[in-house]
Structure formats: C-alpha cells, structure tokens
Image (cartoon, rainbow, N blue to C red; front, side, top):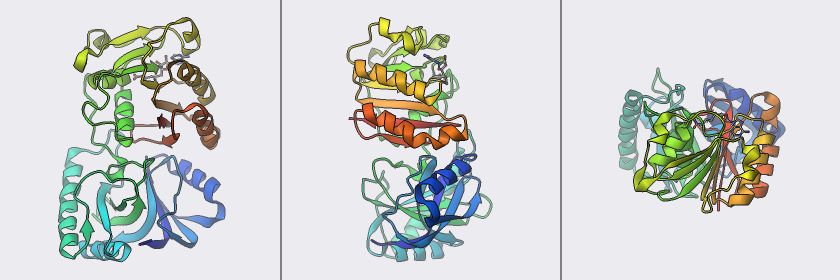
Length: 350
Ligand SMILES: C[S@@+](CC[C@H](N)C(=O)[O-])C[C@H]1O[C@@H](n2cnc3c(N)ncnc32)[C@H](O)[C@@H]1O
C-alpha cells in the first residue's frame, strides 16, 4: 500500500455537503470527525491511520479518498506525490473545487489543464511515474489535485480507481448542453454514460431504449443522437423537435402517452437493451415501476434517476439501492452526478 493518512476528503455538488456528512456519519460512526468544509469539499480526521484501500462509500461524493494536505507550490505537490507513490505509476487529475451549476467553463478548464501539464512535466522530471493521459483502469492510482479558484493552491488527495468510481478528473465530464435540447435531462444521460465509460461514439448505436418519464425529451434527445431508438412513456408533452428527429442509423422516437403504471396494457419493444427512468415520483414508486418494466424487457443497462426531496429520503438511500439491486442485471451502483440537483443516479449493467 503506497500511502496512508489520517485525513479523508470528498468533493460533491455545492449544496450536497450535509448529505455527504450524514452518509459518512451513518457509515463510519465515530471513526471520522469532520475537519473542514468549503462549498464542494469536505475533509475528515480519522481516529486511526487509514490506508488507500479505505472507501468512504458515499453516493453524494463525486470524488473521495485519502487527503495528503494542502499544497501551495508545484514543488510541494511533487514531494507529496513522491511520498505517496514512490515508484508506482499514477494518474494526475487536476480539477476545480468550485463548480457552477451549469458546469465548469472552458476558460477555467484551460487554466487548470495548463497547470496540470506543467505539474506533470515536473513530476516526470523528478522521476515519478505518471500514466499516459487516459482514463484509469480498475486498481490504478489517481492523485487528485483539487484547485482553489483564487489562490491556485490545491488540496492533494489519493484514490484508487474501481468500476463504481468516476473515471474523469473531478468526476466532471466536459459536456455542454446543446441549446436545442428540450431539457437539462440531456446532461443527466450524457453524464451517466461518461461515469460508466459508455460514452464512446457508437458504443450504443443500434440499441433500443425504453424511457419512463421522458417528457419533454432531453434524455431522449441524448440517446437518439447516439443512434439509440427510444420508446418513451409519459403523459406529458414531448418537444416537437423529437417527432422530426432521426439519429444515426435511423434511430427514432416513439411516444406511449400513458403513465408507467398503465404499461401493462401496452406491447413493449422486444429487444430493449437500455431501460431509463426519470420520473418525478417518490423512490419506492419509481422502483416499483422500473422493476415491473424490467421484468418484462430484461434490459442489460439500467439508468434510473432517483429524486430525494428531503433528508428522510436521503437517509433511506441504502434501502432504495438494495431494492434496485434485487432486480438489477449486474452490480448496483449509485452516484450523484454533477448535473443532479436533489437526485442521484442508480446504474446497473449485466
Ligand atoms: C424530470 S421530468 C423528466 C425529464 C425527461 N426525462 C427529459 O429528458 O426531459 C419527470 C417526468 O416524469 C413524468 N412522470 C411522473 N409520473 C409518471 C408516471 N407515473 N409515469 C410516467 N411518467 C411520469 C412527468 O410527467 C415528467 O414529465
């Protein structure tokens, strides 16, 4: 184990800090005491040193791991990385702490990317082993440099990548909302695909999706653009854009204007590979309808938005995830994506 620390960090959406703290208190009890908190960043002190296998296990955390402390200069950061990794290879992820709701702007990314390039060059010169720039594979180490906007100082942290974790720096995919998209739900689908490495061009082309709660159609639009035909279930009106839209390979949208609870009467497409749900209903109702649909279509990819409108619902998240796991086609994963407000994404694939 290359690294040990008595401090833990997590980044999250601004406004989700208390949800992360509550989750961590439930999962780890008195082991971890909150140390400091800024919008989008929390640290804890541990009663005993932790090694990098430690998993915070928080759905509301975007990135989490062991904290190596604040670094005010590149030299210091290189020293922290040398102490943590020695001769082991690692990825360097540099990303901003404060993330506006509409996402990180191009100017901020270009500033952070150029300082990451400079830091990488110094690390390589110092004899450290950085992976070539690519998404981390399972088990690979990541050095997180969480950059403060005003000072350029950063909190340095370490985590080990695994399939349930986000592969991109800061869990922040660089996806812009197309101006013509019928809704922001476009970002929820695109960000869920990026989280689970399903966002390569053509990766889903030719598949069919069933989407519960599809109106007005941002999620549908994202799927159609990727060549996925969509059957959408919602009594709400769809954007006129979709009726006329044909995606790559002839991907088209079909509307079933009924509530999800009335689907029993309707034939569903036989080869549904993807089941998406984004209904503004309480989680038990969402899970009941998703389960009923999944028992019929047996999709191999499930992407389910769960709205958690209050603290009680937030505290019941593990229970909702266990219900989901009972009918999911593979391991059940949950995360709050950058585009989410009071929501999380449940995901599973066979
Ligand atoms: C957040 S919006 C969905 C946004 C949509 N996914 C998009 O991409 O634009 C929630 C939707 O859930 C739908 N909804 C609520 N209850 C439903 C039910 N029982 N069956 C189907 N849709 C439902 C609402 O009509 C509403 O359009």
